[in-house]
Length: 277
Image 1 (cartoon, rainbow, N blue to C red):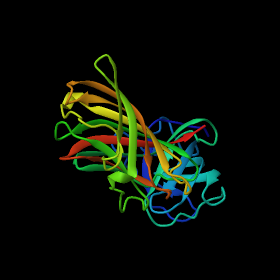
Image 2 (cartoon, one colour):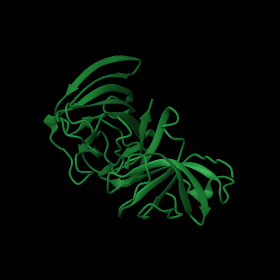
Image 3 (cartoon, one colour):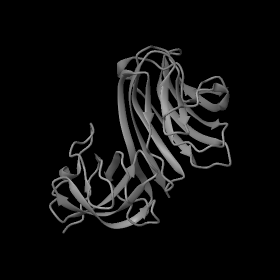
Image 4 (cartoon, one colour):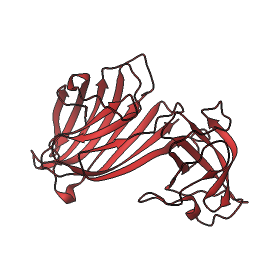
């Protein structure tokens, strides 16, 4: 019996109840499944994280590999069932192998997705009461149309609907292009958190953004975000570094985010992490 670990282990399961977890054995693009953890054999252990994308159910702990795409939930560290085994209901469960946030500081991968030729990119099923702060990385962003606005909208119903009212979002940021600080901008007319306009569609100028979601589960205060984007600005013809913060004027909890483009389509990839401290 050996404790194993590996990067980029992500698979899904439809297992219900409190028993062993059977994963699909087919990893998403750029990931590996549990059977591909280097040198893993029956009765080896690893740290696991599971959450149900269709319900507020999650569990983290120490698993024991059974072989044939099955692992036992040997020791539960944290869960939505008062830190005991969760009787998972129907729905897709995202399953990861990763060091647990309860055991060390850092980032815990909660979800990942990619789109090509799409009008938006959505991240759903990631919310957990384990985390107050989340980090989203959106990268390899290539718009189909040149010189377009990029924004993030939020949802209170796990992606069934999104707030598209521009007046509910306020963004303030400073920006650098060329060789000096160019100024600051306050925007209230973008239908979402403003994470950068005038993005170029030159394929080898793919852009990226990082957004922190601050306490999305809170229900007493407006929601805030921190943002950093770097991309080639089609309007100025220069690289642009954009840093700022935003506010969503709503006290409701939100549990999904969608990245949209003002016109046309885009290709992009995204990952979301829960942050531990």
